[in-house]
Image 1 (cartoon, rainbow, N blue to C red):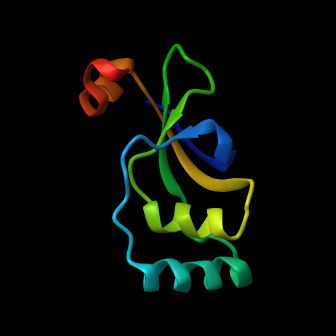
Image 2: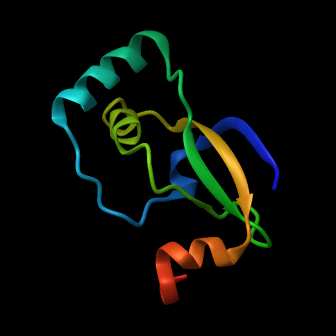
Image 3: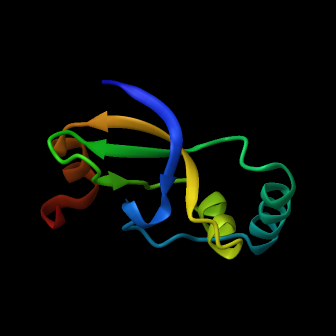
Length: 94
């Protein structure tokens, strides 16, 4: 499985799980990201056979901080995975 790190448009990443957020953590991250940028990328899965189809299930505080800062892209560590990996999370919804 290949992996790379790059900026991805936030509009392209699907986040099917509802996050549970710590407001203080989101605010602290937003301040840090505004000043220094994001140091730790979020983990994103790109589905093999579906170019440009991205899913992310973690990094909810970094994601929310980016949304509040109205960022268009987010630094992402991309791992290509077979559709079966996504089906483990989503079941028949995929």
